Length: 137
Image (cartoon, rainbow, N blue to C red; front, side, top):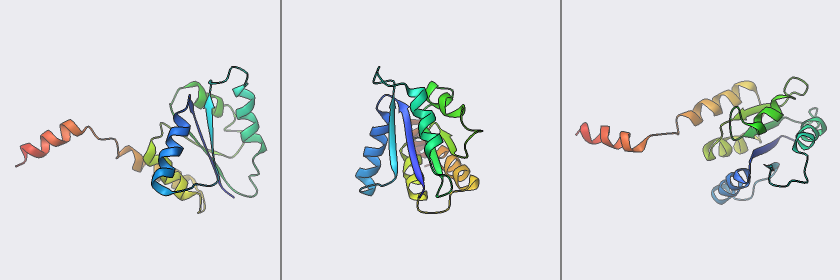
């Protein structure tokens, strides 16, 4: 069984999952980590626990974080070479929907790479795009 962990600073992870469920309906096998919102939680240990306790013999683990170079992503990076999970960062709603859809298939490096590349194409500077479109007419 494949699993997705969405991890972010604060509640962005839950917002992304909530929005994805609004569009797709109930989503299974996804967990959110809202980092640094509870002073009583040792997030370093929590993250280590999540990646070390996953049963990689039964599926793939994908971790999606909010910010490249951020502390949440850095905590997962520490474990990337010890455990065979996939780590993707800088995610948006399109990325989450694509990753959720992928949970029902075989997860490969190429699949994750394609999802990341496709997501880049969804960030559009609309003001400029509209101006260029009007100039073409």
